[in-house]
Image (cartoon, rainbow, N blue to C red; front, side):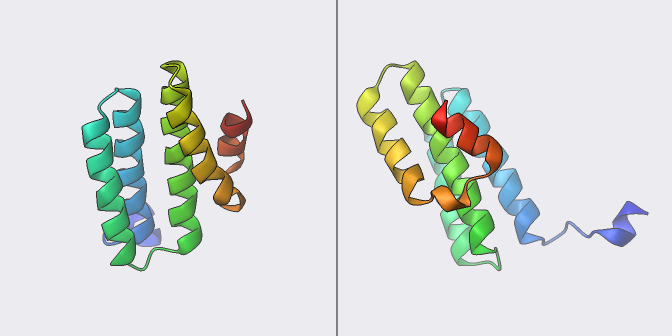
Amino acid sequence: MVNSCVNINNNAYYEMFVIYMLKSNYIYLDDFDKAHKYFNTCDKFYKSSLMVSYNYFSFKTTIDVCFADVFLQRKDLNSTVCYLSKCSKLSRYMRSDTVEDYYA
């Protein structure tokens, strides 16, 4: 029944969500090389798909908050400020849980 309601094959939102999950997990696993690999994949995917801009920027701000969080835990304040600054420019796209993390 679910398959008849929603087809997730070739759905830009679901594909972007998978990329987002991979990126955020690699960030928190401290594997920035793989996180950046998927970050670049995300940008290429966005430019070549029908992804809604709001969704793309929402994922992007959440990932930037993840990076800021990890850099803050490392006490790397310059990188933390850099990622938070990127987020502030796209704050209108933040989900409510991202806003909480941003101000935490």
